Length: 309
Ligand code: GLV
Image (cartoon, rainbow, N blue to C red; front, side, top):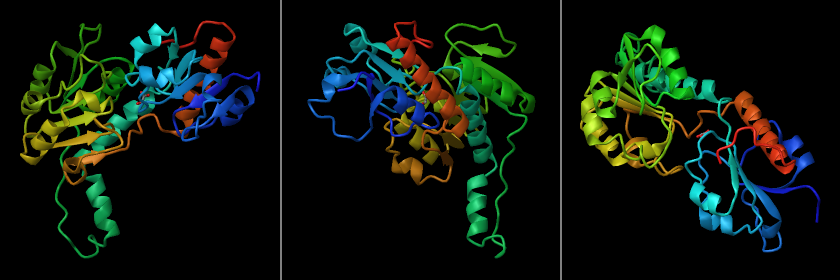
């Protein structure tokens, strides 16, 4: 036994602060076998943006007191289940905004300028062999729509504004910003060339990007998703790409991670990333410290720094 609080990492990686974590807590790791002797010792779980923590998962740990998310999103956690057991939840908002916004811009530029195809072409000797290199499409002077204008959505809009013809956004409530407001995603999609998803994965946003929205976006339109795969009807997206209903998609998130359907992996109209929006050394280190600080605050009986519930 130990007097350090016992925590279980449900995420395989914990950059930058592992020594500190080990010094302060007894740590069980992702993938380790949690025996019936260990389970009751666990007071805290650490999840990430992909972790699913159901009420049944929580029930494996009778003395669980807190779930500290190593992520801003907490859609994978059954909050009602946590509330019923009086389990607190924290997340890491704010510190990952810039990197996730950068990822949206990177996916957009990579997609528009055929960066992946052309990189592959050089490596395969296509340039030297004078293979035909198709022209790409301009990423500048387009109408950009951002769905969800929280910290991340706003950072994406700020980045794209200087190079775009217009910025529009859609949120539940109009915000005090100069950009054009739409109160529904279909009208936003119709008005823009680029639809960027930056809203949380909730019951309200589930499957919102459906056939109708993709048709509204149109055959020159592109979809960028750094939010959650649950926002998109993935089958409708695959069909829209196959039929040329939209021009392409840049995706960091998927409906059933880490599974990505063949309709996406085999499409030349998409740029794919394995959910890496915040995955830089700098940001993951800051996030890790924020997770630790939330855990320390909790176990010291102080208010959580970034509470969810
Ligand atoms: C990542 O997906 C996060 O929610 O931070």
